[in-house]
Amino acid sequence: MATYVAFLRAINLGATRKFPKDAIVAATEGAGFDGVATHINTGNVRLETRMRSRARIEAALETAYREDRGFEVPTMVYPADELRAVVDDADRLGDGHDGKHYVWLLKEAPSASLREELEALTTEHERVGLSERAVHLLIDGGFLDATLLKPIEKRIGVTTNRNVTVLRALVPKWLS
Image (cartoon, rainbow, N blue to C red; front, side, top):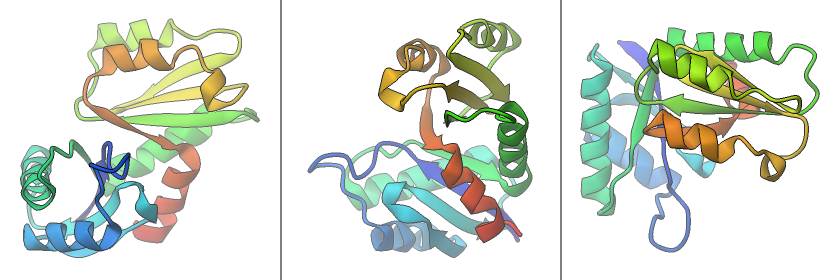
């Protein structure tokens, strides 16, 4: 069986979008996935499956989560090698950077023209870089100081955001 990591968008925000870790595990296992584990309460889920289609895995998880919670939970699924590549890209892009580093994990890979458009947003204090299905934002200040958050999010479609520290923790924890 292959290992995947699913990233859930917009859970545990406010009173109406609660999805505790044990409920995520139960819903994921109920959808037929094995080896399920979670990391912190922000929607990071390790799973194993014989399925090979990322789109089918995402659809099965989104259906299970909607049925369990009663609201949509957009889910981005990364095979182990693709998540490792995102972290490798983060290390390469962030080499020598002392500020914050955030990563948007995308449902679909951006087109070549969108990639160019996003990279062109780079400023003196905010640098944009891309992986296959991830957009990296390196910020000299804090997250709330960033001016590129909204311009990036307007362009990239269905996504969820993680601090690079979380992604770096998942690779040795789940994919070694």
